[in-house]
Length: 148
Ligand SMILES: [Zn+2]
Image 1 (cartoon, rainbow, N blue to C red):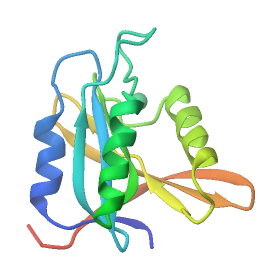
Image 2: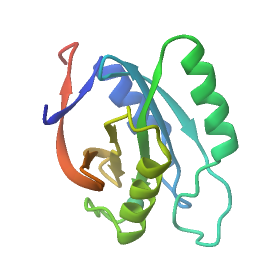
Image 3: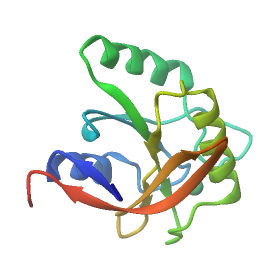
Image 4: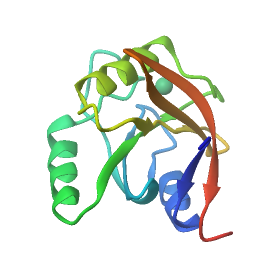
């Protein structure tokens, strides 16, 4: 408990290096097994109303989530980029996270929502958990299973 487990440094690197370093924001999804992140899928997003916020291409991502499910990989969360060094989640981010948790099956007790902070490409993890009927979002550490 209390940390986002990632199977190897290579997975974190593929998140860091995969996202664009120029706006608009991009992001992607996390997949894994036994509460360990093993796979990522990058998403450029779709052009939304707000040019500087990430609007996921949900059709593309849902296809990927279904493909993963066929091979035993579970959806574990989403990540997106923050420009200008902001580590904290915006109000819009929090609302989006709560909405995702609400549409997920109840058996999914927690999801991770890391943010890639530009320009350093620092990955800051957030975890969303259910607390009775409420969704609680907490900052989380990242633990690399395979060492560095
Ligand atoms: Zn954000």
